[in-house]
Length: 107
Image (cartoon, rainbow, N blue to C red):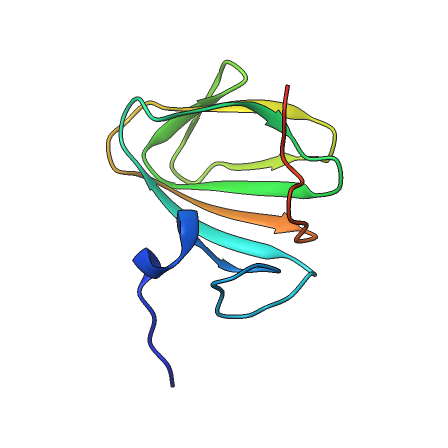
């Protein structure tokens, strides 16, 4: 058994086709991200990957809609969204398939 610290991984991404990673694969990527109220990511899209975001704790707004704990959001390739954190200590789990470096485009 091996032990890792989430803080050792860039942006919480710990599985995927990048370094550092625990499992290197081009099939998918996984992250756990922790946010503070007011954190914001500009509107963007992926041309090759679908993305699933799970709100594990807290709340966030995407494209003007509020999502809360236990909400699961599928963002299909070609769809744009922004991400605004509405509550301190918001935590997300994000899965993208496939893992493609550079597949993030501001919209």
